[in-house]
Length: 599
Image (cartoon, rainbow, N blue to C red; front, side):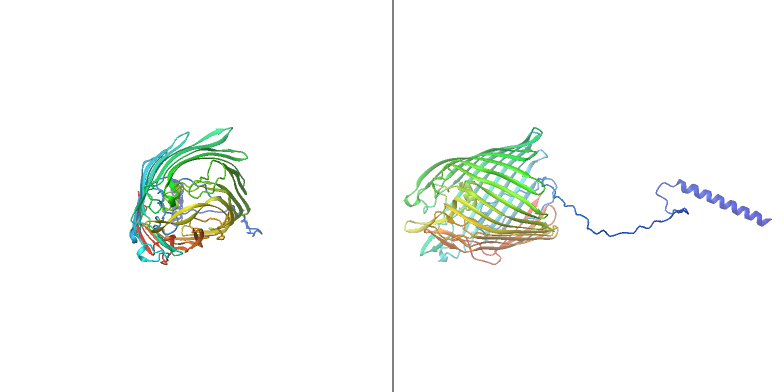
């Protein structure tokens, strides 16, 4: 009896405990059931699926890179970049380059051997989505540049190079509903001496390096870009106008005694537009250039005043069309005006009507490979300002002739990108009237023999061959290299000189290479080289060889954070002696370092 009672009590307790547990479980919120038992019904039958291997690989969709956009001056990370190169290492890049920073404010200063100094600063005091305004300054100088030219026969004739190059500017951009207004103004002041000397054919020339030359430039620019709707299609239109003054302070006596430095005023204006419709884009640009030049020429017989006015008008229509594998542009430049002035080595009267074709074509053969044609021509106004940007030691006396290219083009193959690798092979042909060539003409002043260096215009035509390679591995490695060869001969008796111009130093082979490695975010290391070979210039009515220019350079930058970085750069690591221009030797091994600040 007692056993039956005890059994009944145990069954009742077990039933009550089960009911209480069920109520507790139901009261818990969803997702809190840590131990839940799942019971399968008896009629559940698991189905086994076998994985079969397909005979073909899945197709890979080609990723289209995003369109390039303008940098927004906000919190964009600062790229690690090298500062301006050490002065006078190669025949080009004399003028201090204006490189904007991506930040609202920036400051960069550096100095090094042979009293080389570099600096730049800028601040955008108005910075909003629709309005930007700022100021910038730049400086580049050397105060004790050693002249190591191999063409100087006597060390007593060597003079140190001195120059002090400065630029400053203001800019204002206003974005409106109807378009964008851009205004800027700038000034450029370059003070330097005429250093250098060389001996050719038992004749010695040298400059009076004690006298300082000064070049002053200032100008203003304005532009407007807008957009309209015509027949449901977009019309992008633009207009611009600019004024620039350039003038030299004096003329060395060996050029022309009692002559004054040349002065020049250039006015440019243009209007144009792009109209997009179903079958492509039609573009039309109209441009006018007015040049007023005051200087002198004919230094052998004394200064002959020159007051030259020139107006050139250019009409440039284009038609563009493209699809998935084909991109084409066709048009021409029609230039009206006397572009060949009879001053300082012009090619003579070539008429007032000039036309040059413009054709661009890219056709994809297969993914990652394309053929291309790039045919262009046109007019280059070799203004005082333009010539000073190429060679600060170009003559301050006379006006250089303009350069007209009836045809200048290249064709070839493009490959890539394949896993970061891309390449280009090309062959080209060009014709030019008024092609500038370095000419050294001797003149006597006060019983001393001097060489007045000018750039005279010649008719020239020739071919070129070359290639480029690029490789980029993530943000760690960036490699770029290029090579161009333009064969020719030294015959000056024919109407057309044989050769394709690769620069004012007459180089026939040009090569550049650069490797940048960023092993960690804070550190960037660069190694590169620049080569200009088979150079020559004209002296006494014949070509004279000029030694090869070769610069092996390296540098490194360490960034502490997004604000502060330090850098070091070396040039001419092999300590090579070569001339930038005849008698003007490049600096030997030198080191420069500095600090960069952005805010």
